Amino acid sequence: MTVYESPHGQLELRDLSVTERVFEGLALGDPDRIVLSDAVTGDSLTAAELEADIRALAGGLSEAGWGAGATIAILAPNMPAYVTVFHGAAFAGATITTINPSYTAPEVAHQLQDSGAQLLVTVSAALETAQAAVSGMDMPIAVIDGDGEANGAMPLSSLMSAPLAAQVPVDLDTHVLALPYSSGTTGLPKGVMLSHRNLVVNVDQALVPVPVYPGEMTVAFLPFFHIYGLTVMMNMYLSAGAGLVTMPRFDLETLLRAIQDHKMRMLCLVPPVALVLAKHPLVEEFDLSALKVVISGAAPLGSATTDAISTRLGCTAMQAYGMTEMSPVSHACCDGYLKPGSIGALVPGTAARIVVPETGQDAAPGGKGELWIKGPQVMLGYHGNPAATAETMAEGGWLRTGDLASVDENGSFAIHDRLKELIKMHGFQVAPAEVEAVLLEHPNIQDAAVLGRADDTGDEAVVAYVVTGDGQVPDLAAHCEARLAHYKHPAKVYSVDAIPKSASGKILRRVLRDAAAPGA
Ligand code: 4UW
Image (tube, rainbow, N blue to C red; front, side, top):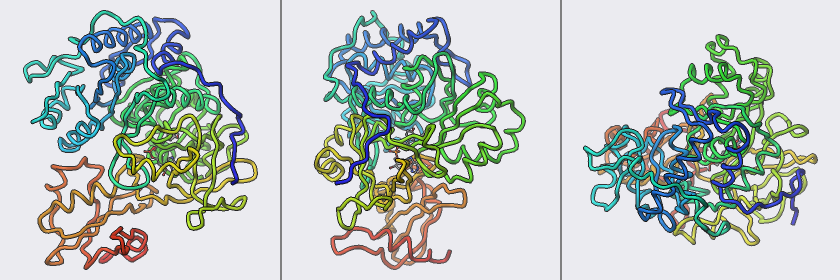
């Protein structure tokens, strides 16, 4: 077995809950400094206000029976109060499942049911979807903004009560703190069970190659419902004593203005935003001279784009790599590990193997194989799905990432391809199996397969192949609109005679991918 260790060495594990870790960061500096500010509404929270709100919500949730043992769902865009809800629930000993606010009611309902949530916290703008999702369920709804009472929901403020003095005790290693959803290497989205240990250690692991300084600010447009936004934006910045300008959705001008006005030093983004920074003319109209580091992740980014950003903005542009199942960070570039096209070196306390899928053997030095990861940030497993957990976790605690990778003699890793089914659209997950299931609900579709096809920007589009009785492609707009968030809708649908499958009935996606698109 060839095991690659982190050049940063090991990391001392600290027995803190994720909220206690964030409180450490809030205590670094003036308690009256703003740590969260909404880029659109200007609503803000100081360090002292955030801590007080978290303690008050934790107190109220505990009193109401939504503390220890409860699962709370959050369906909201990025906003300062998102942090209050996440950490109020965490401090009260609850489990939090984070839902994409662009989901349709059936998608929300599915995650609520699968996660076993008992309370749904949302915003007025998503209330209609939330109510449609919970119809037929005994699921109270709390609304962060507005009173919601007219609609049978309760205002979140009614859950604020006497502040909780201390973390409700939970086992840091086994209690499920967060339950974000990921399809992993195959199948439908599954709840990824992450512990307090996972999330705390990953913040500290990421801060070694990617330090963040007390008092600085960055823009959080990467959504908190996704693990990248949750750990790297929310928890890493606040734990380091820094702060965030939150954006409910991406808007270039707002982003550029925030970087300029707050003299931001570092920006974390995804490849489509990296491209915009490299090319968009609006970038010239703002003073971004404070920006020194730009980090991209969640999907591949070519070195041409990192070079273009470095040249245009006079900063270091580089990649990091993560996966929901790893809380999420396992690799980041840093001094000594800035090789073009690379995802950098292993973060502290993390080990890797490169395993050739066909043989199950470790690849020869420099060779390609599936990236396997072991470390304290690796998930506990998939919620209620031991079969999927067993498929993903190899013996000895190794997580199979489903990514084809290699490592050079210096310890810089590169990702070459995705072996798994997953499609990445703007950095967000689209599980082919989920889209296929929706297509199969259409009365005229007999069989379906879905793939990602890279466009000329390197982003992926969802492409569907369908078998229909008459060989015609049905109009799927209304069908998909009712069932799937927009970013999961197929951009192209082709009619085919048959979907290639293995003897066991598995879709042969590579065969489909390699065949010329019919009519294209
Ligand atoms: N290059 C190529 C990359 C890369 C990549 C991810 O939705 P998930 O489960 O999770 C994420 C997490 C991304 C992330 C977290 C923390 C961080 O610092 C960072 O970089 C700044 C990124 O996206 O999807 C996981 C899958 O996304 C692909 C890869 O296929 C992985 O298994 N992926 N980062 N740099 N591909």
